[in-house]
Length: 324
View 1: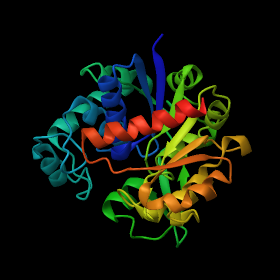
View 2: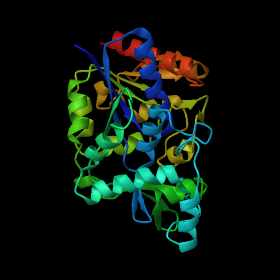
View 3: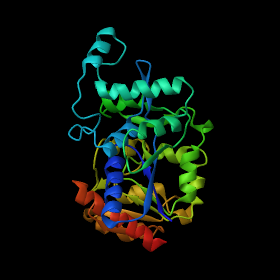
View 4: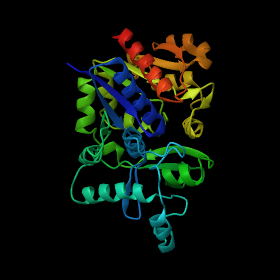
């Protein structure tokens, strides 16, 4: 029977990590199925279209059609439609979408308008390419993230992230509708059958945080028979990618691998982690993290290419195997 590996996360960090898991499985000749539970809380509506940045980053990367240089969108893009939308004033000039990317958003929106669930849209989009993994939304419900600002107002996460580059101080994050949301059937099924669960090195606040905040998701993780291993997205006190430091500051968490581990917590103490990988640069923190009940190892975390990404995946799976 194939081993079931479940990865939880979103965005570019998750995309690179899942590619590494897939590459390691291929190189090692493992009989394994890879499922990915994807954050949906940074999805939003633009020009009447439903945009899903975290999902699409993973989809395009696994399909081999992503723009690796920019880190988002499709390779070999044009932007004629975006320019036309800007003329009509139906899209913000700080959020540019390529023409190929817009094709995805139009298809997604058409299916949603026709009554398809987000899970079904994931299935249809994923069927176009041989991904080597199955993507599941954390929830089929809309839980768009808004950022609470110092003056008491709130803006959509994408405006704070893309337009302001997280330079406007945030007082917190709010996912509208999350209290009534439910985990998707695919996400719950994957966790129930998982042999290993891996937290990707994604933003712990706005990528993994909303997944854990979906009612029932933490309970599913705590009740999973599989060992749960996380990979730090913080190396040497700095975020590997993006503005995770600004997000962590907003919720009062230090930008360090140890602080993020404490934020997730040990499963034995009501948290969600059994194991944690930190960078070699953070080896000094290993013992303190172990002291709170999370088995920790220091390994190379930089995912520079297929080799380093596959090795990181191998290290995560090895720790999970030892915990099992």
